[in-house]
Amino acid sequence: MRDSLLQLEWLVGELAELYPPQEAHLWLFSPHKLLSGERPVDLIARGETERVLQIIAQLKDGAYT
Image (tube, rainbow, N blue to C red; front, side, top):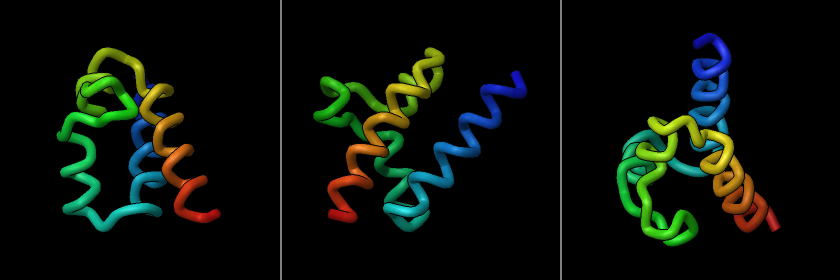
């Protein structure tokens, strides 16, 4: 449980570097093309947080290049 919470905390911090809170919420609860139309929040609920973190890393790489 602790590891899951730490991953979520890291995920929120990473997402906060890209979006203001309202947009981050929208990003989490909207279908995403890079996730084959799935919502990040659904992957997180299934324990696939690492996959969501990979997408956020890709977005950050694109935002800072």
